[in-house]
Image (cartoon, rainbow, N blue to C red; front, side):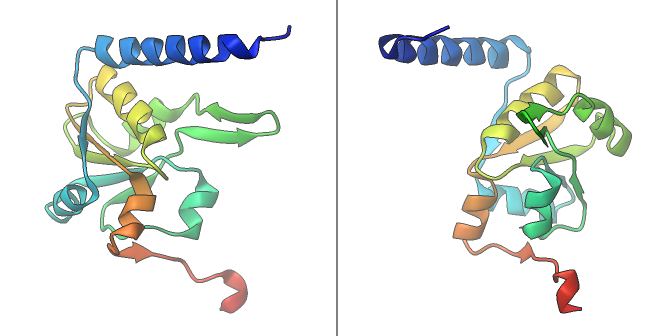
Length: 151
């Protein structure tokens, strides 16, 4: 099926309206904090939930004592798809009362993941706006694992 280029802006607008509806209909409001506020929350005991792919995480991640990498999206031969076990994996690693900071590469996946967690009944969840890109840009502490061949 061919899609007219003229329809693309309308499709994009409809998608954004749908996304806004989904985020607003969950009942809980997504709260986005900047990387500096996220750093403060992490240092006062919040768990950092990195929702990037394992490959992205292994290249470097936020330096945090309490950190989990549970991908929101998975790479497949057909492209990225939502991790069907995301909520189950988070529920087995964290309880619904834990204070969570959810981050990704640039802030998009973490926004979706935060909305899903709030809809699932997690109470203390914040989205980290700007993601790992902003964290690094602000020269905040990171962990970059040593490559195995360097050992």
